[in-house]
Image (cartoon, rainbow, N blue to C red):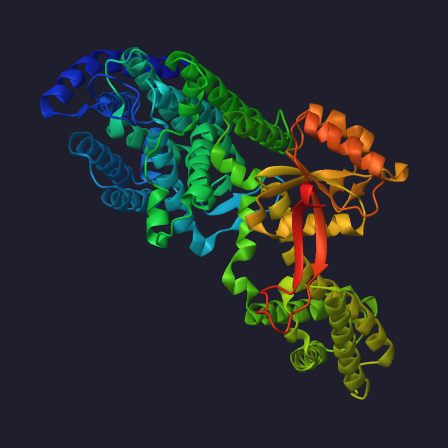
Length: 640
């Protein structure tokens, strides 16, 4: 057994060392040259047909082993997986990569051929049938979903290695680590054939790395990255299979962790980029979707270079991360470490890494810009609110029925319960429509609107229960519990759907506030009015930071989500720290000595002070009517 592993490792290594210089000459002869441009790292033209030497080394070695050991398990493996079909798919992917290295094919054609090759792999026997999840010992029978999930996995991993191929030796080195991990996983599962295939691929890649590591003499090219991604995707399916068909989904996700994370991050970045302020120009959905697949210089390895690491340092860092993923997959397979612990550790590490990589697109989530979706026009239409309320009515009835023990333990038939639910929903929806609930504007929700919602909800539940009271299909004691639970759930969801709009508005304005940092003097009702005005009107370009107030009992408190720093004596310390660009006085009846001290400190740090006033102007009979007879404005302190 050991001799077989040694032979399967060293033979492809030697073949790859011999063949790669020849492939370099072939690449130059056929014009498979990667020329420098603004997106690429290298500065001189480089041959990029490296996948050819890896493919030949791999196929020759595997064929020789099969000839030397005809009675070994290889014959059963080849027969079980229809090797002729899988060999055809591997050759198809290699030819696709070679053509792309020479002629730069369009992405659409490449995806079509990849999907076709993935379908061939499925027909060859590499497929997901049952999946076990990390936190459950049960299995999920994929049935009709087996084919699309298998093809998506194969195509996704194939392109993941293509995307990560951006530095000398990066994709080939990570493929080597992944193949070694897959070999170890297969060995633990007593799948010697898959384990040997992984070793053969590892040897081929190490021989190629002699010419591909920085400074590279040849690039992997699409011929290599697509071939490696495709082969590793189907080997990961085989190596992670327990028994005949059950597939542990965590194992291949870890074994191929780095390419998967880089690909998912790239797609997430490109989606979030749609919400950045500078991307506000309207483009079609098709153009946005197309932009998800366009190359850029924002991958993980590009970010490491931007932080000042050399190519070698960046590659070695990513090697270490890939090894950590692969080693974790082996430990989980061996049962040495719990899968839940691995998931937690990987999640923490990924969150830390994303923060350190400093992607500006992630600011869409971190700063709440994504919450701007609440401003979409259709969300403000009363028809959308009716739809949400209808869902709330149905959900409230369902949860009330689900949680009521007396109903669940009663002898009421399923047909009767459905009749009850239908009557409840119909009556409540009619009350909502006819009760004037939709005459109130959701965007301008006030206390009177909340009372109207409470009234309409109470009447809807009361009337629907009263009608059911006289029906023989339910016992009255059951009806009381159902009514109480239904009122609670319905009121919670109807109020919540309306309050949520204002919560999003508040969070968006608070988290994405730009412009002058405003300090409000007066943590009272007038101060809240000022705060609301600053948050509501974009044209003010204001970003409130908190309050100051001379009431000692308010210091350290939180008012509507903003801190009260203390009295006016704290002002100098705040301005010394450069925390505010402007002060707005919302308090009335300020002591003139206090006002003088505030003005003196503000002048010292060249911070303007303004006073918030509400003025009522009469309409003069003999003069043209002013546009705003009721005026709320912020005026300069000099005008006070």
